[in-house]
Length: 113
Length: 109
Image 1 (cartoon, chains in turn blue, orange):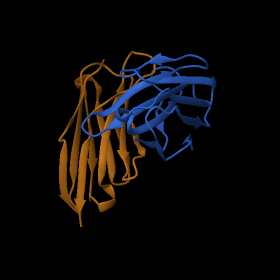
Image 2 (cartoon, rainbow over the protein chains, first blue to last red):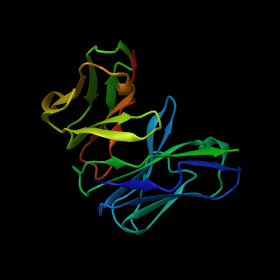
Image 3 (cartoon, rainbow over the protein chains, first blue to last red):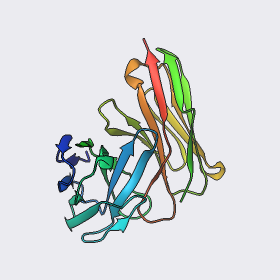
């Protein structure tokens, strides 16, 4: 079975802190994604990566950066957390190309005070 | 990007009832998936179904790609079926999937 593991289920941070959300997959998938989910807004794509050291902006990249130094790991970084980044963050991975099935991690619920 | 519309937005059923959830999309797709979001927030894969029909226990799904819609059928609903059901599609753009807003299903005992 595909396993996508997110480092923290729940985090509480203060405004201005640097926040790292880690995601690891064990299926050698090429593609990895970060989404955020907010009530009434659905799932919105922040960034995705289709190969090591490659990244593409999604719909809402402002205030975020990402890192993919190894194929299995995709990190989401909030350089200076703000209260409007309080959300559920979901990591996903899939095989490369246009047809690979997407698998999600358990999610990380971030609260910024 | 591809527009994905799901209906109904909310559905309330009594245990044992059947239901049909619909997903319409605006362009041809290479991938279509149905997910169930559990109460803890995790998205669980139900079906990978860019075309055709599949069944898994009480759930089945049909995608008619030429008419740009997919249906998810839930038979003999149980309280554990409650949650949000998402449809997501991938078109010609490399990588990304486009999600609908979901259908919130509540099953009462």
